[in-house]
Length: 438
Image (tube, rainbow, N blue to C red; front, side):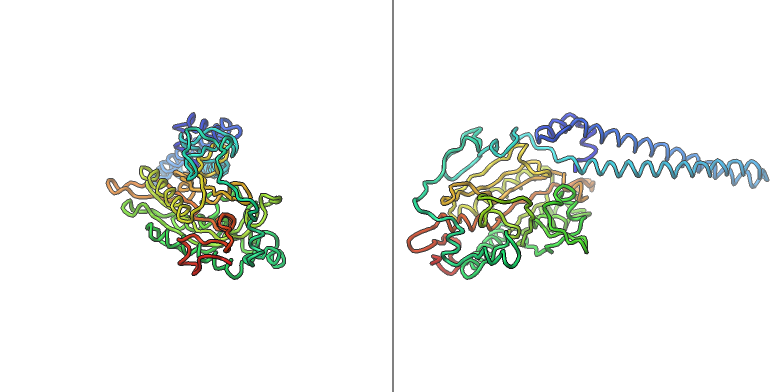
């Protein structure tokens, strides 16, 4: 969440940033935070004053009792008792203001960096790079027309999966429901090949592999911003009050909740392979057919914790890492800088990677790489200690998919159809043990 210091010291910048994110009633929301903080501070000031007076009176009572002035001492005792009752009310008032402050701050999204373009929807995202052609300044998704040449008669991945017995969508419906496919044979092997390939690439790039739980408590969901914003998208285990993770970002980033890290240990670089679970309520239609949108899927996540002055460099390195994976998989891709209105609640800047599906003739999002600035760290109380003066301050958190498997599998199947079968990219051959799925 945004810090109170940022809101009070840079009120106009915060309001401007919230308006860029199309947050409604930004001015009123920020003023409500400031007013609530004023109530909290007023209660604290009065409480401090009363405590100081009570301390003085307590010392005075002792002196009067020694002098035998019992009646005067009893009068002051009565005043102290009255102050204690007043202080109870002040403590309650302060506590209510603090709770209200947290509630208000949790409802306010992160503010975007200056580099984030104005815009309300995905059509206004900026195409910053592609391996199809050079991008021009200000190229938006809405005016992007370059796509690979389609081949007549190419099949979509759900038909290829059936033809080569790779994925059984109907069996998944029988066992669990729609959105829970069953991978089998070389389809299962392709999943495992991609997982191992992505993990090896992350390890070679200096990421420490983590194997976290796939269920988290509410504090963890709150720490990374899934709660209270996205509880409707998460599967909830009511009996134990635990949540199935929507991404490994949640458990991995929460490793550093309530932790103070030495500056010399930054940046921290972690990666994790997990199953991910998303309810995706209301998902239906051709855009979610097959692997395009699932309730359960495999994903490798990369997470970084860094200093404010180096987090931009970390973000660039993460973007280069994801781009390198797509290049090695020989897929047509483009990189988008998301506009304010299409960014997540918690991100300060975000880039999406999309691959092109020749059979479906559409772009498929396969990764989002975000810098959250101090927004998550403030919720997590994730800080680092400066080497120079030993002072602590909030760290920056970053994360990205590297990569999510379903749409990568869809694109690999659809873009690599040949007369001999589905061609396996050279980088995956050692993991698959074959050059073609036939």
